[in-house]
Length: 77
Image (tube, helix red, strand yellow):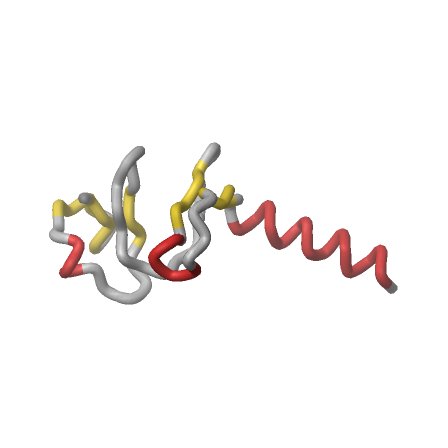
């Protein structure tokens, strides 16, 4: 897998992932992390090892989630 370190793409082993790194993911990859989707579309995650649910969950980028949250906050108040 590749990540950004010092603004350069570096090939690393998933055991070497550090907090705060930006990781480039591809279809079918298994990444043992809790993270934030910065950019992407059509991303789904299998969280069955963590939650026990076998359904893949759709993920949205951070900016989409923030605007969605803001819209619902305004509607509630």
